[in-house]
Structures are given as C-alpha cells and as structure tokens.
Length: 206
Image (cartoon, rainbow, N blue to C red; front, side, top):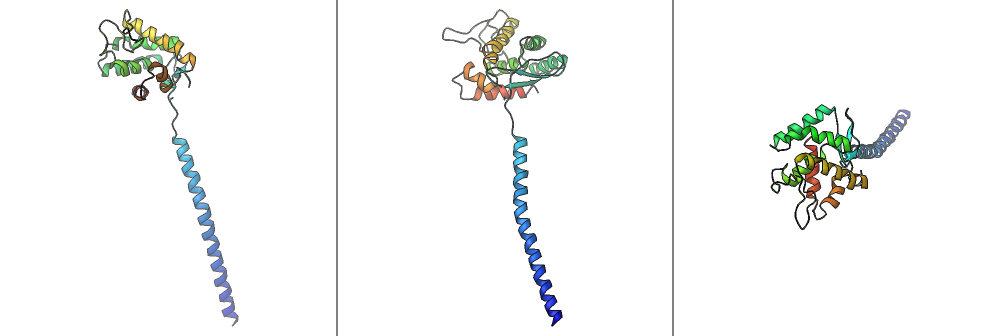
C-alpha cells in the first residue's frame, strides 16, 4: 500500500516536472528566436551611399556630398595610386576616352572633397562614359543641359574640373549627398533609374 502511494507520488511529481519544462521551453524558445531574427535583420540593413566627405591622399573613406548624407555616395579611398588604378581599370574596361584622365579625376576629387567614383559614375549614367555626347562638347555628364542646348567644355580636363567643382558647390555643400538626393536636382524628372544607375556604377568601382 505504502509502495503504491510512493509510486503515485513519484508519477505525479514526474508529470508536473515535465509540464514545467514544456511550459518553459515553449515560452523561452519563441523569445530567443525573435531576438535572433531581429538581430539578423538589423545587421543586414544597408545604409545609402554617401558622396560627401573630404578625401585625403592617404586613404580614408571618401564621401562626395551632394544634398545630405547613401546611400550619400560614400567612396572608399585607399592609397592615392590605388584609387587612380581603380578608376583607370574601370574606364579601360568600357573603352572610355576618359581613361587617360584617371589621375586627373582623382586629383580633382581630392581637391574639392568629393567621392572620386562619382565623376565616372555620372559619366557612365549620362553618356556611357563619354561615348555618346554632342560632338565637340567634351560634356560626358549631361551638365548644363537646357532648352537651348547642352553646355560644352574646352576639353575633358575642363569638363572634369567644372563638374567636380559644381557638384561640390551646388550639391554637396547644399546638402545633396546621396545619389537619390542629387537626382532630385540634377534630373528631377527621373523615375529613380538615374540614382539606381549611379549607385550601381559606384559599386562597380569598389
């Protein structure tokens, strides 16, 4: 009789113990899973490219601001020679007439404090890297287009410097920092494809 009673007590204790562990398991597991998923999504969340931040000759992150901070088109600047080679290889890959101006592009980006990848990226978006431009204009960036025609430059060097300085003064310094923000002023009628293209071409140089 005593043995049966003890057996019943042990069975009851075992039941409640198992029930307790089951409750704890189904309470803790969803919470842990939720925290893990939240952490994964937080880590994978991408920030927009930024374009403005002063570049140095050694190698720091380069931001070329045009209205705000992108995707600003952020550019990573490694050693100066490495950046020049990066631009040269990119332009050469697409047989761009700008290939001989790779050093000048990086030099002017540093001088005006913008992302060195921005000038080639806009040229790619606007003119297939200078392969489709009005004859004799040296304007690969669609810069200064208006109802009376397209602004022309005296040379590619003149175009690179004018556009770089203009992006700094008229965009970055006024808060247009990301490709999306730049697009709103640079080509306001775009449906978003302009910024998507510029972002894609910037990433292609990274």
